[in-house]
Image 1 (cartoon, helix red, strand yellow):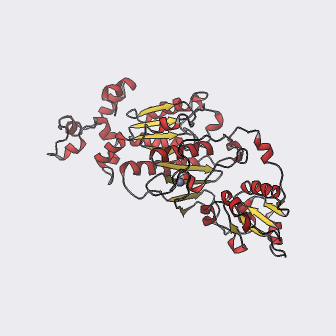
Image 2 (cartoon, rainbow, N blue to C red):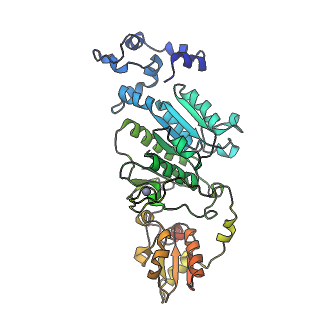
Length: 428
Ligand SMILES: [Zn+2]
């Protein structure tokens, strides 16, 4: 916690105006209580500055926080990866809550297109590093917090060093390569991390790297190939959505620091802003996980190509057109003979959210297709689907290169099927 002297230096004039609101009783109670003395009820507040008593008044009276919880928050060191859409509410609320040290990692500058959702920044910060803009705003909220800015992208070279200086990590990144780095670094260092992601009208949150609970890689073994995912700018996102998901991440981080409540470890929370619905999927650790499994093969960090805004050379090759079928055409073809074999190449947790098992679909996750190729029929068409039709297109292309002649990609994937054919199935 900053001393009163530092506070006054940083914000001249502020301290005196705050002091005017403190009752004489309140200021006396801390000024003369010896540290650690259990004799009077006031001793619980030993060590707090007078302005802290006002600032955190709603925490001091709150069950599960109180002065001990407030001390735990002040001693906590939280790293926030990304000072953007998710980072804005996370940083603001953790700072306001009195988290002692808040690290921010972000290589980007504030851009006008950020302001639709990144409410930490404003017009007067355009062109500044986001970590600098964020620090100024955060110190305006609470100058007691040490804000450490890392003006860098998280890479395999710096991730372990940066992450090791903190107790827990909140991931507010917007791309898969960074998300995998955060996961792997946290698992290797034994640090928990609070995951959040937003896309269009939907968001997800969970907590990974805690005890026997799964890690992010247990859900998705490898990042999608470069060039196969629409860029962040292409996909779009509802401005308020990161505000909702980031606030959930902030709540999870605070609960972990306080050691209270039931966290999201082992559960994936899925929020749909269009329906205003929350759903939950149970997550299981994968014993074969490359980083947290029984025989981990990934013992040091690896970088993946960035594809959010960067178009790798391989993208054009991967985007070769493949035979497609629309959901309406597929519905018709499922009534005919020979009935197409429906191959679902999503991950298990996606299957559990919703699937086409009632149409005979069989789940073979993307990474397992080559090991289970014998299970695929050669006497009838195979229609491959995933969430939106991107992973499945790659599988169709690879199956065709390996002798399968009648393979189709379901255009728009599971999501298109739900939207056009079976709107009662869960969306995600
Ligand atoms: Zn894992």
